[in-house]
Length: 228
Image 1 (tube, rainbow, N blue to C red):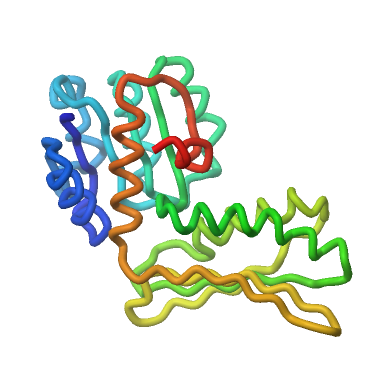
Image 2: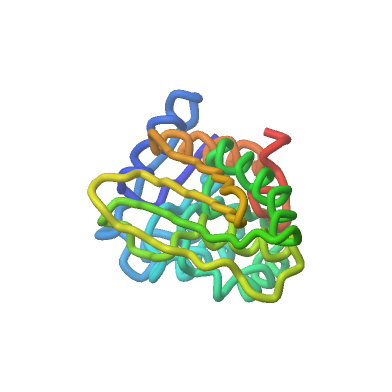
């Protein structure tokens, strides 16, 4: 496939590496070349099948708007823009494109999400709960998109009105560690996912792009990862 990657950061660089290993043609565009979505034009995207975005929250929606209006399918791993989710969904539906987004494209994390949904039953049996997340000091958003996903799914699965508290830490070069803890007077239950490499995020994003090629619709990665 012909892919356009937005973002030259640590994860973006791995996305490009994985895409080439899987024999895709990929062009990488950094922030200096793409101010105000200047690089995302219909002419530039003519031969592109999927645009992949791993940039920053403040510019992600502008990138999405430009890509979707140019009629291109998109995979978005940037977080921090979900306040615009409904508007983006409508835009994708209006233009008949394909779109996959996620706070985390790691298969392991998505398995963790399934466990979190099941474990939410603890809140109906006298347990209290809390979420902890740790990331590197350069991470722009806090709490992380992954922690917010865990919070939402536990709240929905448990039927509680009050969401679990999230405690965030930004330190060193921590790639991403998420803990879900339930506690009662009698015991404590820990669920933890500790990312050892960003490559898991990159592999999931490329697999999502492959799955999305030729498809239309608005998808969360949780809906499709088992099909990859």
